Image (tube, rainbow, N blue to C red; front, side, top):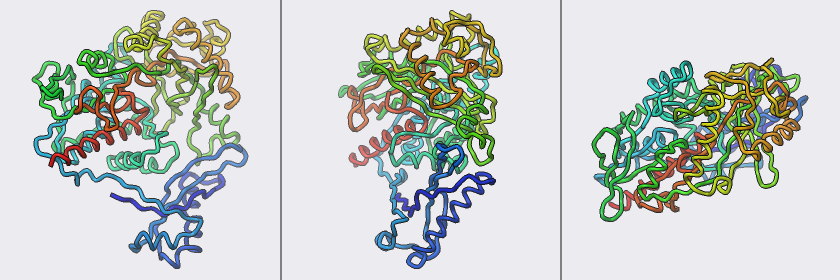
Length: 542
């Protein structure tokens, strides 16, 4: 399905006394004036909508919003006529979105999707819309039951190893900020955002430069998408763990094994398993699937007062109603190693995120309104395969050793340290202005023993460099909570240009756990691309 746009870019609206909607209205009016002056006589009346919006706060005394506005002529006009009428102020853009209902699929196809995170969810939705009635295996529970178990873990410390912040309906992203920002340029990113809106997401995610949904809203959206898959004939099996494959004489998967259940017939297997499925990585190795270790990152969560971040970024306009909560993306390199902020959560909470007993793992989460007192972000240091011996077991043990050491150090609480103490290599200073928001117990201690010295050195270096970008970033009373170890998958399941496993022609490794995505949007796009690759093959069978 083609979507055609006439875009007016780079409309700059200075910050006024109005709220966000007032500034949007000014941008629409500006675009309409340009259109009326240049194109109205050729194309007639048009409807206008915001296509992209970002904030330029580089000059704190001259903050501006930068808009791209979409103009849609009210009367149908052919592409050639539109292009010939355009002036330098406007650009014609055509985006091709898939219509899965139009795929002609072969009879007898029985796809199985493992995992109902963003990759598995959008893969299953695409397959269901194409009429294939996929079976989805999710080791964790549905989102309502999952939320109950996560809250129980946060309150009591009792962890369910199959249903937690990492495993269950919606994937790890369900307990996050619901950030949809992506660095990939795939046109299907727009399809993903539109789909989220179709199932209940706020419409501004289509045009904001840094869109987010929020954990509270995302849970309902996840349920709505699941219900659509089921309504289209899909089958979703919660609390059902993937345990292996059975292959035919030609090496293809013919069925999958599940825990405490009968084997499930399978003509194509989509592995959308998430970045924390270490036991599944080991299982795939035993099954002869080619998996390799890869680089990842480890570090800490840092917390500031959100009001301090707002002031550092916006100056005297920090509390302006038209401005989003302040957020940042920072990075620095030294001697071939990187340190960077990751998964920044304005007005958010640091959450306990372990998936195995005897571990401490942190992550960040925000609700839609981002109205918490603290801002938090991971500060992560790159770890190369050479750092852990370039083996699959070495990659997983690297993470496990840090997580286990944190648990042992504190008896099950999250290690917490002020930035001042960390930089001074001491411990014991109690939090002052900033109260740790961690959803479990915390323990004041020196976090340095958890990490190799090169990680500590880069954390220290990063704090100094980031202070140059954001005043107060390395404030002595900022809070560090350790450890952050699940920034990305430690492995990659190798696949070819058709997105099929190098080891088996009807296995499709997909998403973050397979090593091909980083974040909700890119994982969803990868799931869609894998589904499309498979659907194109089924067309060839007819």
